[in-house]
Length: 592
Image (cartoon, rainbow, N blue to C red; front, top):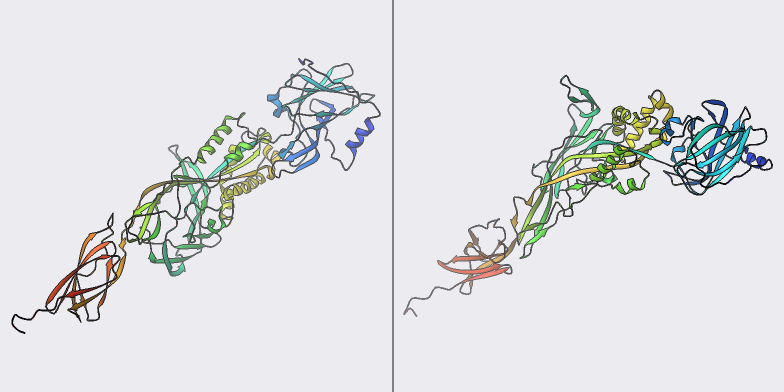
């Protein structure tokens, strides 16, 4: 066997102890070991189990129980090979969810061997890597059975069990593995249509109606190879009855298109249309208040629609102001961070380069390395009001559903992963269409539902190995790459005006007349907007008139009454009232 004895403990299992151990193993209330028949010696059978605390991967429940071990068989003339372990496992543990339990240490290894030909002498338990003999369990008188336990303080990669006969001949070599969850990560990629970012806008319902011809949605997607060898994406669509609500803009900051999208209430699908007030471009189904407005597809989509975020402002100060965006966007947004969990979970990235590459890719997807916001402050002039905008350009929105399956089962069906993904499109589409409202992890949950459906139609070995509970959701990664096309004040920024009460006197007598208005220099830096322009001339009755004049400017007012003129220069603000006094006419010389 090539095993060198570095250390050794020998324990004889006497007849007085056998009934005690046998009672524990045969107690109907205690879990029993399931004996496996040797594939090359039908008279020989073996059962191995871990008795002690076990922890469930998904629920973190710790439970005292006996779990049957995985056993690989090798003939006496063979050297046990860990690389051949999975191929030599002839019977999986009988527990329905055995793949999701970890053995905690210390634990007790229970071993039971039976031989119908009564050849048994002992079973040697070796630590495989260090070639260390941990225990010898001796057979009962007559050589038909070995029953015993071994205390294990630490986990190891493999343990070897050597079953020897009465003449020290090797009857069988076996390898066993500790129960340890190992995950194979599976990803499914879809697209999602982000709704527009928030706009500071006032709307009202313009009308209701039935969508002529219905609303068409994609219900199936398949790749087909064309005659020139290219893969062509073929889509199957279905049309649903749809009720449309249209809107009109009544005030505020209208989008650059001047229109608001209709809201489509699609029968059996859900609502597709403008987001509720307060929702943003980054909101996904992770927020129930906004999630129903995000349309998800089971395939990546090409997306090239500019979105405009707007905000009203009023800067009634003599200084330039900076208007902050309603939301600060980075050039990449990932609302769910999964990498920390992926690093903590027992992945097989060391053994499988493809899994390591996948984790690296997920890491890149989640990288939010941009420290500075994409959308910045917009400077606006003193004494101004209006709207500012940030034109955003999202490209290729993608949602990645990440889930895990047991690596131990996957190794038995190496082509399962690729075959499964190609078979998931139709059931995945059905799951998405049926889960359009209020689902937190839409894509990964839909993928696992599709996984279950695919098992119902699976054939052969895969159907025997896989169970519906063998898929665990890890989460969805929602990725949105953004670019800023432009930002700044929108057309129509106005100068804030102030009412100034203007009256005319000739001498001490109020008089009616006209006032000519001329804009002077600005006393702010930068200057306020010039619009709106006041009238060039205003008729002023005897009791006076109110004139709206732009703030931040000097205004020159020239009054004309009784055939005479006078001029006053005022600053707005602070001036709110001004009387233009015209000197009375002087009597001719010598008239008095």
